[in-house]
Length: 285
Image 1 (tube, one colour):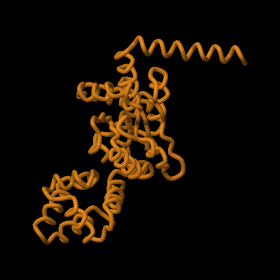
Image 2 (cartoon, rainbow, N blue to C red; image 1 turned 180 degrees about the horizontal axis):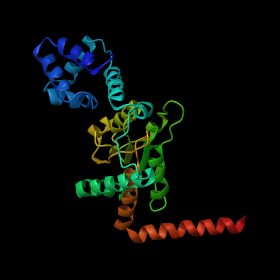
Image 3 (cartoon, rainbow, N blue to C red; image 1 turned 135 degrees about the vertical axis):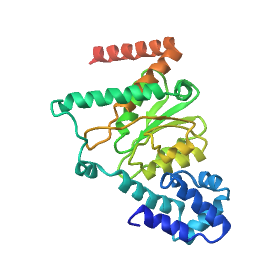
Image 4 (tube, one colour; image 1 turned 30 degrees about the horizontal axis):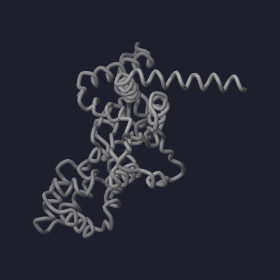
């Protein structure tokens, strides 16, 4: 496929039966994001069964749903643009007397204000409650450009509560952690444009084993959103060729503060214990 028109034409022209037309219509309505969820979500939207969706896509030459989604992801990537594409796109005109540093800071301040104005407290509280639940084991992971957010969450959250870990992603994608994931696990996923198919596959497998999922993503929403109990979105506007994570970082900080507020005494005691161990370790050195 070289364009969304090519892929859409293939989807529409290949539909013959009534069920196939329903699938094609459901995909066309908000393409390409309509194709980035699960088979079940697409089937429900179209009013058909999951096997019907798969048979239609197989008819079009996609042997697996993941193969179809990979083609859609390529199209989404083309539409959104890589950092190289962003650099080739002329920037918006601005006051020649305004320094880039000031303009960047004001842009991020405005982004923070917008998110604060549109925040849904109940969605944030749902994630904070799950992060604070001592019965749950917290596991965080992110993509190529969002792994540092997962690391930040784990580094701070691990100091105020037990059972917090980062799922490391080495070359390729390690599925080993799935062996130990189950209903007592909360998976915190950071996935921003350009969305990563391996994160979706991992999330689907974890959800299939009973894990609970929350997501931090951009306004377009990662396809992982279909699997998540709660979602926080953040704008990623930036004058650089790379999407900004200023708002996302602020969201992580707010979640940490919310977890502390839910049991301040327990957080204080844990921090004091960590400090005592650090002092003991330095004394033995």
